[in-house]
Image (cartoon, rainbow, N blue to C red):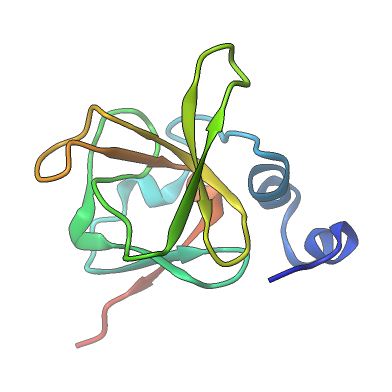
Amino acid sequence: MVHTTKEWRSMLTPEQFAVLREEATERPFSSPLNNEHRAGEFSCVGCGQPLFDSNTKYDSGSGWPSFWAPKDKAVATSTDHKIGVARTEVHCSKCGGHLGHVFNDGPAPTGLRYCMNGTALTFTPKTS
């Protein structure tokens, strides 16, 4: 999925644009999705691709929505050195939008913590 900068700016709020397209980070504990506990699915705000199931979400205490695994082939990663230390950056595999970072301090079964910006996500509750 390819859009011009102008198209992305028209599709996203300024905060969403800053996170998804400029790799910004939202303030911790600022996303309502941090406290979302219903069954459902978290998707990319930029393109709508499903990224995480609610059953992989957990409270990491970090201040950002955290998951122990993404959906199959939903995300891509790259190495980020922006803060002077190597981190694994997480992107939407469909539109390339910046979602957050993944760390090796998560719970079983993966031991991973996908620390995502809530601004980069939408939530759709599961219907009965």
